[in-house]
Amino acid sequence: MLLVVGYGYCQSPQSKLIDSLNLTENLERRIELSQQIALQFMGTDWERAITYLELAENEAKKSNDPEAFLAPIYITAAKMYSSKDVLDVTLDYYQKAYAIYKKQGNHTEMAKMENNLAIIYAQGNDKDRAMEYFMHVYAYQAKKNDSVQLVKILNNRGPFI
Image (cartoon, rainbow, N blue to C red; front, side, top):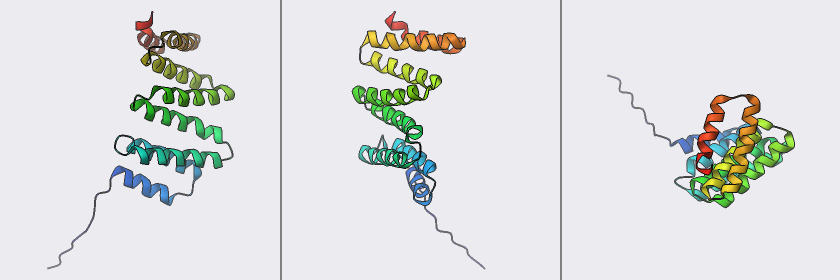
């Protein structure tokens, strides 16, 4: 009788991503994986999360078009700091992403960042700034005639009217 025994071990999601990161040469993929790893660690190991976020930023700066990669990294950083209720740092990162999208003339992403900024300002009880950004987003969506997004914006700004 032949007995086959297989040995295996379970890898955590972070370990799989780290293995993938270590094996890839593609700069864009390295940036994506570094961000994914940072998000995986943000709830359990903040220092490691920041390390991988910094790795993503450093990799982006090596690229031919750093801004194309930096804006999403800044958004990831904003999400991470928002999860810790560090609103001032969250705002800084959303503003950095917004500045890149503004420079690129990417109005769709600008509107997303303005919505995020409005929400963070609202959380920080800066009603005037929150309303200012909500109105920018509302005007953008009104031009697009996107009724679903208009309703979402009105719901978000409701407490400030």
